[in-house]
Length: 102
Image 1 (cartoon, rainbow, N blue to C red):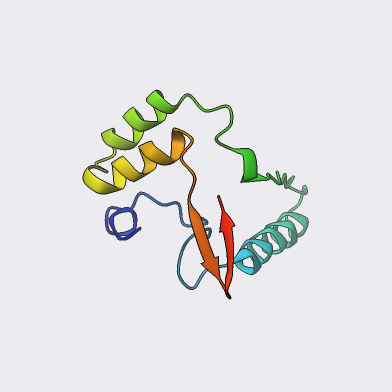
Image 2: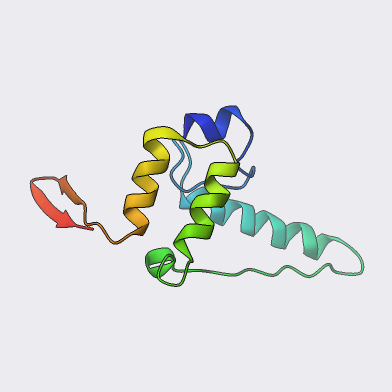
């Protein structure tokens, strides 16, 4: 994440997985966009798309994604971890005493 922030590879409105950012920020941006659009004459249109990323990688071509990630400058252990994640490895996360396999 530090690499992405330091190299300006995240869009301003990217809030997922960023410290001090949350879905509340996204709701604010959406609300403000709607308000701004309604204040313009003629009214500007606002479009929103809500995605569920829980299965986002099910249809991704892993080799191409790894190539794209590598071309942005992400290398070493981070790239290996992403590669392993995309290849179907399972990870365990412990939160409040409960273990969840991802």
